[in-house]
Length: 220
Image (cartoon, rainbow, N blue to C red; front, top):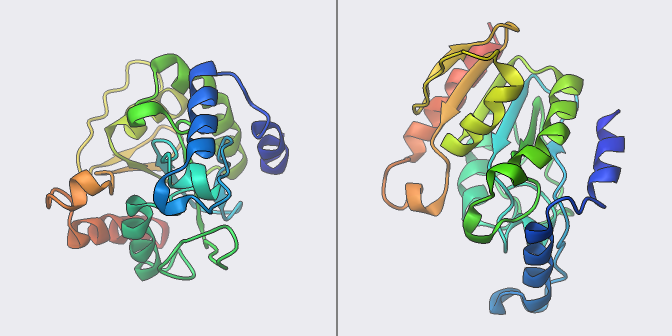
């Protein structure tokens, strides 16, 4: 299955009744600031360069971010922190991401989440995450990245079953680096959520350090 075929099937996915109900209810009721916006309200496909050497893994679409715009990390505070960093590191064509029609494109980087639908409270269940893993596996098998970057502990824990053999012991930490049996690298980062960036747990300098690490690994 190609990524294009995967995304075509993904848009009709209704495997998780709780998530289907939530994403569609949010799209109907909307946030007041976006009441004139036509919400996406469906599973959000991966986004980026299909020939990328870097695969960025997030948690899930935001209810009024990706669930509204239909593109990963677009329209919320996490994206407002992420895309300037990707632009500075040479992976994004521009530092802003506001809609699917804003002209942004990614070079040498592809991004997809553990969970494709916005979950209540940003907390997908274990079964909901398992239901989405086959989509992520198709993308990883197709792209075969040299570096995988996980944003946050949930993304880190979620992708391990696909990239490491049972019994492997990898620890999560900001800018931690692990060599996988496939020869690829796993790089960890705190998630650029408002909770982390506004409290100083994740600063611009700390985030740039992660992307300097990634750039160093692929440019060797």
